Image (cartoon, one colour):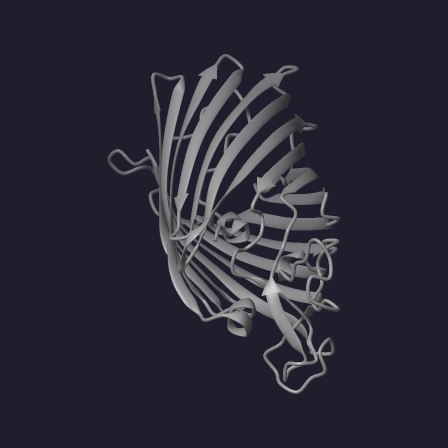
Length: 377
């Protein structure tokens, strides 16, 4: 199945230029990533290349692979551990004209039980003496859902995303960014393998399982504010707050603060702390009172009430200072993330003997490692 969290963690798409009137730089990135936590291991490479031509266009291409080995708590309590591979290819085109820029992109992602295709379009323009940048964007995704071992199962998902962003230079050292997005999902939105549990006195453990049932529509809204302050000694502070709400009654808040510090010997160091909290979906429960208790039922821990905290440490070393042949600059980079998850109403069923509904609450830590090289030419 598609894993939005993992994709977000490891996506190597290069950050777009902060100003609409500047094309992305020519560059190539090669990444190796690793995620280990909660019984899930994800590893794989990614390669990204960007190139300008005709002074008005920039093209990009990305190849990305996830090799997944899962024995998560969901899997070990209701199914067997599994291995799978997800491959993703994406292409993009940027067109620059005066103070505005247009970009289009297409992404295809393939797993043995899930196919996703996404088309995106965006436009941005500098105004007020290039101190303000306004951007608009739209994405349309069409996914096909399958189920391993069941050739008769097939369903569809359509996703639409609308984006609005404003970037404002407040002073020579302070940059402010505001963004808002709305996402609409329609179709088969749950996991075809996951099950809910309900009280059942006829079983030895006191409960039984049946398949999840989700609504077939979901609309979410998110707004964020970001600030970046450049310090006199070339370092920078950044902070962000994001608020999220959807029609499944999930409300979430994200706080982030970070610091970047370069030194003269070619090293750049960074640190970041991120805190996230959310409320549960209105049809989520760790334990339902009976079978078919309500129209919609879910036991996905990502729809429960939980908090997470992430500590990031990163380092970058400039390995091609002054250029070498056609390479103008090159860096080696390592980023380490330590993530901590605590669930407030999702219970760990791997123990035995506990009365249903009194099992210990679930928590786990995860480590993310990214090693990559970047070259500008």
